Length: 353
Image 1 (tube, rainbow, N blue to C red):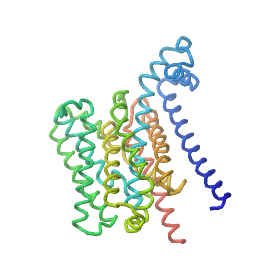
Image 2 (cartoon, rainbow, N blue to C red):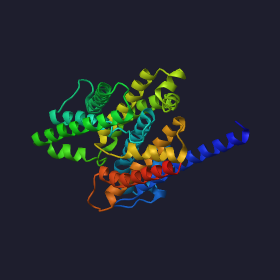
Image 3 (cartoon, rainbow, N blue to C red):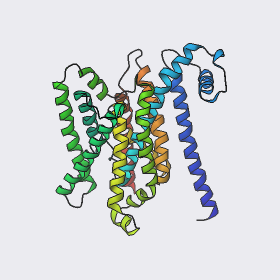
Image 4 (cartoon, one colour):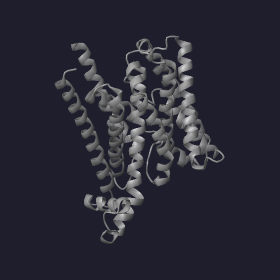
């Protein structure tokens, strides 16, 4: 590759990371600043600087602002950012693996499996010995992984070649079936009804630092696995046969990537409930803007997905304040039209090509 072309490529990627990073930083500041009580951005910087870096003194900061930022808004913003990042990178990996922009944790049934695991935990008050608060994400991850394995097995029974369309259709069927199981449990429940329904609608409200501690290890583990498999995802995005010719152990890598995606989805669903369209729209949008190379697509999806969900959460709690909308409603209202536009543009490009 000529030196000029390499420089152009590096400049483009640097611009992409700068843009995604800037979007995330602005989202974080807005998410902490705006609310029932407005907190000036300068004050936010002083509070975070005083708390974590020792740069300022708390004596010159209003204690009310300190309490709002550190106990309410900062953990909420961090949690929504982690959930958005987890769903976005999982969606990017599934789309690359299955070579289809319609693939994401929800269309494949992974999210519904995680939801069943979480609802069962809440319904039966399950607790794994020595796991404590990690019972919910562990059972969500287990159910999400079992679901994707069942979906793939069933798709293979229908069609040995396991075409992407067959996998997605099977995922949608199982997602509907698992949704019916959740509805049955809601119908049978008593005192837990409000808790389960509130959780299913999707929210990061009043979660606090404890929920960040729950999702963070699973987010780091799942993201690390996918980032380490970026090269293999690039190979498999051209088809399994070509990937095998390039020396990729397709079956092993496919299982690892699906397991990592299940870990991310299960952990996200466990702490925030069902939030759709993030894993569908964000990776596709990132691919259109910054290219299909998973070495860059995965980290850029993390940054963009995180910023997107922080803004969606901000809208959900301010648009009809003081009433708070479920964050899943906002992501659907934003995500569905955006994805429809993307599909229309893609269809026009195919026709003109």
